[in-house]
Amino acid sequence: MSDLFASVKAQYEDLKRRKVFRVVIVYAVGAWLLMQIADATFEPLNLPEWSTTLVLWLLILGFPVAVFLAWALEITPHGIKRTHRLNVASATGNSTNSADASIAVLPFADMSPEKDQDHFCEGMAEEIINALAKIRGVHVASRTGSFQFKDTNTDIDVIGAQLNVDTVLEGSVRKAGAHLRVTAQLISVADGFHIWSESFDRELKDVFGIQKEIAENVARAFQLTLSPTEEQAIQQQPTQNIEAYEFYLRGRRHFFQLNEDGWARSREEFSRAIELDPDYALAYAGLADCFSFLYMYADSSASNRLQAETNSRLAMQLAPDQAPVHASRGLALSLGMRVDEAEVAFERAIEIDPRLFDAYYFYARHAFAQGKFARAAELFEKASEVRPDDYQAISLLAQVYRTLGQEDKREAARRRSLEVIERHLATNPSDSRALCFGSVNLNEDGQIDKAMRWLEKAIATDPNDAMNLYNVACVYAHMGKQDEALDCLEKSVGKGMAELEWMQNDSDLNNLREHPRFKKLLLEAGGSG
Image 1 (cartoon, one colour):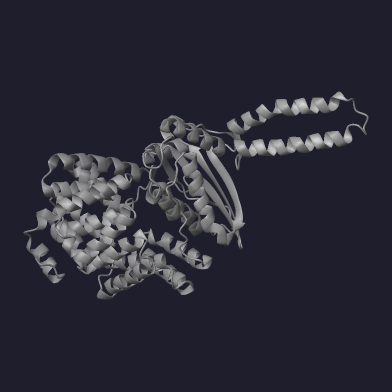
Image 2: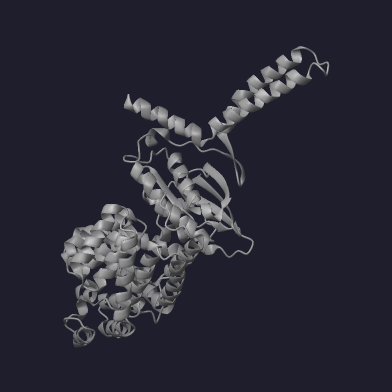
């Protein structure tokens, strides 16, 4: 009986998705009006008595045609499209047991007159990604994975194959003053058919409602039933101040440049958001992350670390129920060697949102830095499950297995990581971090020439970046080139690289452990030597 109920419910949701009920209602109202007009006008016009009967029969015959057209076709922003039929048999379960729903959300296109809303378009897509990620039964490609296809005109089937998803959500934003027009369409990778599409003409202040409706429509298209917890999670409104929200989106966009200039500009935008809304918890968390990353990779001054701790504490006080806030807090605390407190924060983030990649990833890095390699392996594995298109977690997992001496697991993770890196570099050929991680894998695979080409490209891409210099040093050390590795490592630390605990446990640097220059570097930088 439960299977029958689920099947009927799935069919009902499919009819609703295809807007069949709406067409039936509109057709019935239109037919009734037409019959009223016929009754009132045919006799004065001296039309034959059978004319009214003819109209009635035409309306009756037209009804199944209208229903069929509603079922098979839909009007989209790109014209009339055939509506894609979902595999109802595989999607009749609720959100706890469906495993077939997968989606990539592309950055929305900027249709605004001034073409100056890139931050808003990316922010719209990122918020929808975050909302969908909270729904069990939906695999969502990461922001990094989806956003690599921005402005590429890549075919939907190619995107689906590279990100391992069955559907793609794309859309556009037109923002003019206080008015907002958003279009969105969910497309099947298999055949290019539109599963669902809609346009939203609203006031700018309704942006959070639009994002929520899009997420709900996608879930409905996948025939998933949201739990009360999921409903609550996707309707959270981070701020009442739309101007503050726009500054926050600009800050997020700069943050993902992942360099010192980007973090500096991101700090400015987050600070502006906080000026407009002093209770904006996510803006404080964003500010904390900026200072954390600056401390780790650019300027290891105590002031940056303390700023990270202060802002993360303010964020947690304002929004103790938000997982990203606790993840930011954990990262900031880990930099100050407040080990137990950091672990509590990471655990709380995972408890609130078991699908939050950042919580697993930074918790894993924290565990690795503490020498807790088995725990780090568990967390990197989980991070990789949550975000399979991320090359960092799977690459570091392979490294941890090497440290643990678990060669079978290391080899499997290494091969997986190389596959992910190859796909990533296909659309991000200048990602120096991916090039370095890939070089280590290629070197272990015996592809020495290719490893050197990737390494040289990484060096040329960011020759003065502290994080890149550290990664290059790891590759050189792994290749047995001690002098080159130490040169890069000394430059990296000199430019502010602060992850000394990581350096002490990094197996990529094992070839340097007994070298006097390495020991001296750790001592001078505050390590244990």
